Length: 241
Image (tube, rainbow, N blue to C red; front, side):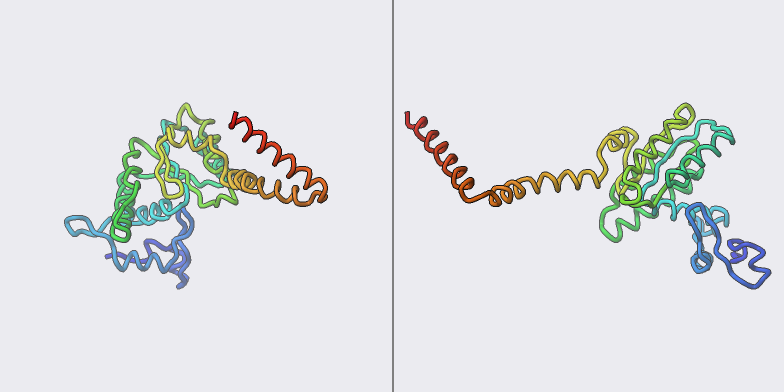
C-alpha cells in the first residue's frame, strides 16, 4: 500500500504538517506527491512500481523539463572529482545528477508519447534515449538566454576540465536534441543577443544613410543628386557606344 509518508520527510509526518520534498531538480510539492501516490504507475503485469523507482521517475520528469539537459558518461570519476565537478557546474548555473538509464529512458518515452498524442509528432526526443549508455549523469539548467547567453559554451568549458574521465554524448537544448558533434558546432555560434544586435545593425544601415543624406544642406543635396544623374547618363552613353 502506497503511503504519503514515504515521499514526505518522516519528521514532518510526526509533526502533523506536510512539507515539500526536495528533488534534484527543485522541490516536489506535497500536492504532486499526493497525485503520484493516488495514481501510482504499475508494471506491465499490473504490479505497483517500487517507491524508489516512482520517486526517481518524478525527479527525472523535472530534469527533462529543463531548458537544457546535457548527457555525459562518467568514466570512473572519484568522489573528490565528482564533488569538484558539481561545484564547477553550480558556478555556471547548472545542477548535476547521476541517473539510472532505464528509468530516465522511461521518462523520455513517456514524454515523447505525450507529445505525439498532443501534437501528432514526438519530435527528436526519442533520440535522446539512444545516447544513454554506461554510467551516465546529466547537467541541466533552466537559465534563459538573457541570464546565460553562453549556456552551451559554459557547459563545454567545465566538461573539458574533466575530459579524461567525462565523455559528453549529447544534449536536449531548447527543445531539440543534439549529438556531441552538433553540440560542438553550436558552441561556436554567437549568442542570440549578439546575433540580434548584428541583425539590427545591418537593417539600420540603409535608414541611417538616408537620414544622413536628407540632413545635409539643400545645396549639398542638390550637388549629390546632380552628380548621381551625371553618373547615370555617362553609363547610358557608354552602353549606347
